[in-house]
Length: 188
Ligand code: AMP
Image (cartoon, rainbow, N blue to C red; front, side, top):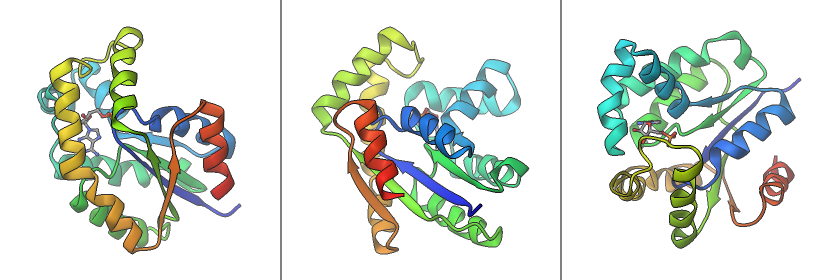
């Protein structure tokens, strides 16, 4: 089988985790969520978790070198042989550059960068709702606001980075989970 290497990008609350999970089942490839890796490190109280906790609670980004190290190690694991889905990484241009280098070195270049687009108004409503259901530590009002700022400042430039490389596939993230899933699978 041909390997399929995907990145999901989009603002907080766009549905990257939900779609990443479904894509992972559909194509039998792992979904790699840096947020999930960090949250479990925080839960387990590992040195990584202790370092990351403070940044995460504020909605700030964990330093690039730390995150790049985690992903670099994860991508050498055997289960990524037939492809992978990255959710929440890269989040800065230096992370994207590091990923370009490491994925080429491993002979598994990124094929599609799926940008899930949702109007800000709707995102804020979704995140307020998620606070009731998921109880993430960073779903407080201040942290939500700050995560948006960080997204606009540090992560949104990735859209241009990948557009210039011909990898960007933008889809609307408004509609049902199934609608959005269909939009994504139809372009893969
Ligand atoms: P997420 O679940 O993707 O929203 O990530 C939750 C939090 O983990 C973020 O607000 C950051 O503090 C941290 N984080 C996750 N992925 C990254 C990344 N690629 N770069 C820096 N920080 C990250």
